[in-house]
Image (tube, rainbow, N blue to C red):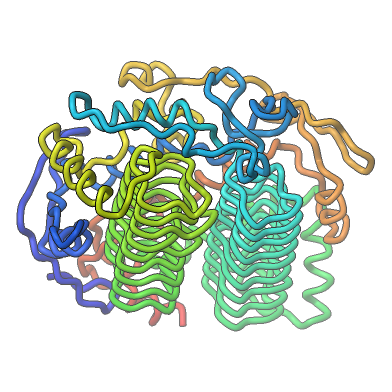
Length: 556
C-alpha cells in the first residue's frame, strides 16, 4: 500500500515472475488478474480465461511498438493503380500496398483472400501468410482532407508530417498532436492553437517553446506554468502576467525587455538563463491534472489509471500509453479514437478488441487477433476487412453458428501451441526495428538489433519532395542533408517573427523526444520532506524533485 501524491494506491501482489524476453523480474497483482478475467473472451457462453502475461509490461509494450511505423515515409507506387504516392511501407517490401483511397474503395475485396484454418500449423503462421497476401493501406488515414503526408491521422484537415494526428487543422511536424489548430513542431500536446515547439502542453495559445504548460498564452520558454499570459523564460508559475525569468515587470517594461531577448543573437543566452532557472526550481514527481486515483506520468482528465503514461479523457486502465477516450483496457497503446474493453491492442477503436492492431479508421466490435480491420464485428484472425463484414475467420465468411464453433476450436488449438494470449510475434512485423516507435523509446544500434534477430533498414534520404512556390530549401546543420521549409511553415514563422529552423524536422523531433522523461517510474525520496515517492525522474537525474504535497506548498 503506497501513498502517491495524496492518493492511496493499493498494491496487492499475487506472484513474481521472470520476463521471458528480458529475464527481469516483474510482478503480477490481484488487480491484473481481475482485469484479465474481465477481458477474457466469451464464445457462445464459454469463457476462455486469459492467463497472466509472460513478459514484463515494458517488453509487452516494445513488442507492440515494433508493429508501428509512425513517421518514416517513402515514395512508392500503388500495386493497384500504379500511381506514385507517399507510404509508410518502403518500396523494397514485396507485398501489395494501395493508396489509402484505393484501399477503402470497391475495386477489391479482402474476402477474396479468405482461407481455411489448418489445425496442423501454428495459427500465427497462417495469419502471417494471410497478412502477406492481403493489400495494405499505404498510410493509416481516415476522415481527413489534404493530409497525404501524415500517418495515424483521423478527422483532420490540411496537416503535414504529423504522426498521431487527431482532429487537427493546419498543423505540421508533430508527434501525438490532438484537437489543435495552426501548430508546428509539437509533441504530446492537446487543444492548442498557434503554438510552436511545445511539449506536453494543453489548452495553450501562441505559446512558443513551452513544456508541461496548461492554459498559457502569448508566452515564450515556459516550463510547468499554468494560466500564464505574456510571460518569458518562466518556471512553475501560476496565473501570472508580464513575468520574465520569474520576475514581475510592468507591461511597458515587459514589451521592451522581450523585444531585446527575442533577437536572434540572444537565443543562446536566453536558453542558458532559462536552463539555470529550470535547474534551481523543484519539479513535480509526476505530471498529472484533473485526475483521480492514478499512477503514472502525463495523465489528464482521467481516473483509476495504473502504471500508464500519456493518458487523456480515460478511466480504468492498466499498463497503457498514448491513450485517449479509453475505458477498461489493459496493455493497450496508441489509441486516440476511443476504445472500451481492450487487451494487448495497438491503435484500434471500438468495443471488446483483443490482440488487434491498426483499426482506428472505423470502430469495430468483438474482434480477436485482427490486423487493419475497420468497421467490422465478430471476426477472428482477419486482415484488412473494412466493409461491415461479420463472422469471418482468416477472411473467410461463416454463419454465426459455424463461426462460434470454429473460434472455440482455434482457441483450444492456440492454447496447446502456447499462442493464445500472446500478441503477434515481432518477427512478423512488416517494419524494421529502426522504422518503428520501439526505436524512438528503446533505441539500439544496428549491430545490437541484428544480434537480437530484428530487421534493420539502411536509411536513405527523405523522399525527394518537389520544391513549390513560397518554400525554402535549407541544409540541416546536424546531418548536412537538405530539407524543405513548406509555405505554410514560412507563413507561420513570419506571422510570429520566428526564424527559419536550421535543423531538419527529423532532428527536431528526436531532440524533443529526448527531452521527455522515459515511460518508467522510479522510487525516490522527496527532496523536501524525505518521504518515499514514485517519480518519472530517475534517481541519477539532477532535477530537484518534490512530492506533490511539498511541491504545491513551495510553488503555489
